[in-house]
Image 1 (tube, rainbow, N blue to C red):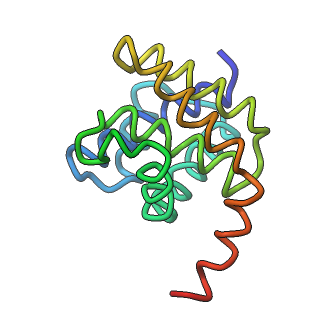
Image 2 (cartoon, rainbow, N blue to C red):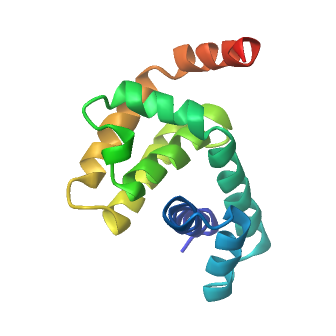
Image 3 (cartoon, rainbow, N blue to C red):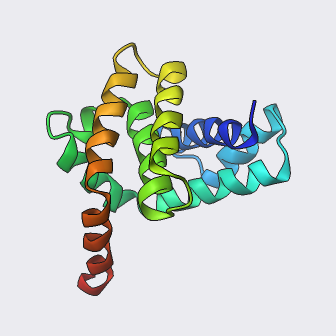
Length: 147
């Protein structure tokens, strides 16, 4: 399995543990790495994703609520919510991953970890967000000035 794909899986598992059990994110990542060690580049990538998702969680949750209004965040499956956060962080906030790659990776995670309808749901929400990427980035530039 490719290093980044594996790092995304580990990230999702750590964020799930953080979300459900409230364990510190660094501890959750270390627990995953004890079970399945990974190359240092993968560890760095997973760590950056976890930190980014947590740092921008409020902003990303607002976007998810806006673009998936029929699915309130507190009623959304924890896995789906975290898959969306990872992908949004990757293509919208960190801008390190091409949009299509981030969406494809998110759909693949949903196929593995989510319910039967999760891949379609994830693809739909992220596809709608992707169509608005430039406008959303412009909006995000305004956010720090307002806080």
